[in-house]
Image 1 (cartoon, rainbow, N blue to C red):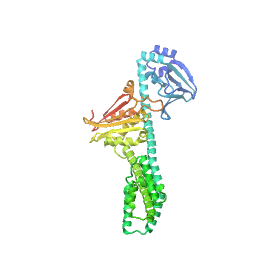
Image 2 (cartoon, rainbow, N blue to C red):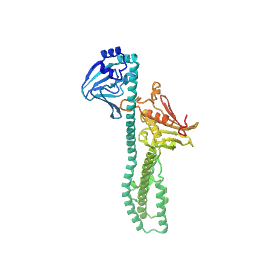
Image 3 (cartoon, rainbow, N blue to C red):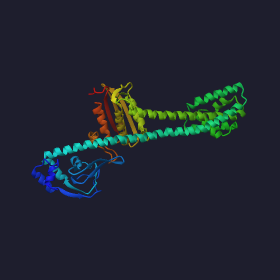
Image 4 (tube, rainbow, N blue to C red):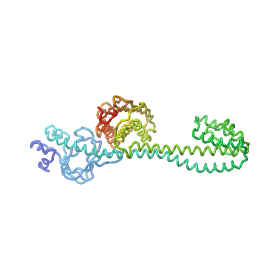
Length: 465
């Protein structure tokens, strides 16, 4: 390496001959073999390096993955970020092939910045360029990671009603076969007109009761099932232990059964009551199928509305609908122990907004709140109109954000999570969407046990103040 080589580098091109000579004398040439980890994300930085030859891969942890953000070659600088901001390394660097570097210590680097305005400008240009490159790449990765998280949550949410639907359908097949057999036996009985009318009334009663099953505490249910089973056994009805829970589920007790079946003889009861029980089981299974199908439909509708598929980017948005759809998307995380409370203003005006991106704001804020509360706590969502704007407040009772970092939480790459857990872009993305795209405001107030993000959005896009 020669001084002429250093002079050709943008970082050092403006140094005086004296400064360049001093740098040349104090800088430490180093050899780094292929495969060595030169820097590790999260560790302290004590020097920067100028690449003389070879290649270096720069990676950043995002979730469980290592994302390659750049490959550096001869003449490029590595490791300046942690020296400038005095924070741990923001990325890892691995040597791809045997290489030679120039190591510049932190003290020498500070001295260089103090003595050379040109070096300051060169470093500033390098830093800004790298921030733009890294932010662009990681924002795309963040979106893909968020999509993967949402997809995993939706798969979990869809699996529950789908499994219930499949289970109910399988049970319904056997139950309908039994009910058909009992219906044939029922038809073979010699009923008079009054008994025939009673059978018709029972059929209607089964359908009515199946849509509104009774609600009892476990002890009361157990007592009633025991009483109904005794009533059935006293009349010689087979499988009383199996029929009793079904009949109780639909609200029958011994008095209701006595009233409904008094028109039948003991011999007829041995067919009529099992027929009622089998019909009740079939009706309840059909209602479960309906509820499962409606739940799946609700989730699919929420996803479609959340993403605003096949619609123009700017919409007249119902903020409440967007918030509710976001809660559906995150339900798999909320139901672990988060109590969601809503304080929605009635008649809240619709707003002009980039609908899908606005839902990303709600997702990022609520997801952060869930993580802060470690899956257990209270989440309050409040909305109200104010001075031509719609205000949304999302508050949690987590540990809070320390005062000294509250002003930095919207900065790109700033995160309090361990390396690889977060990219530090979630709230930065939310800030850009609210402030830059919607001309709104986003701010946070926090103390232990009470953190509140307030988003203020103009009703008409472009007229916010």
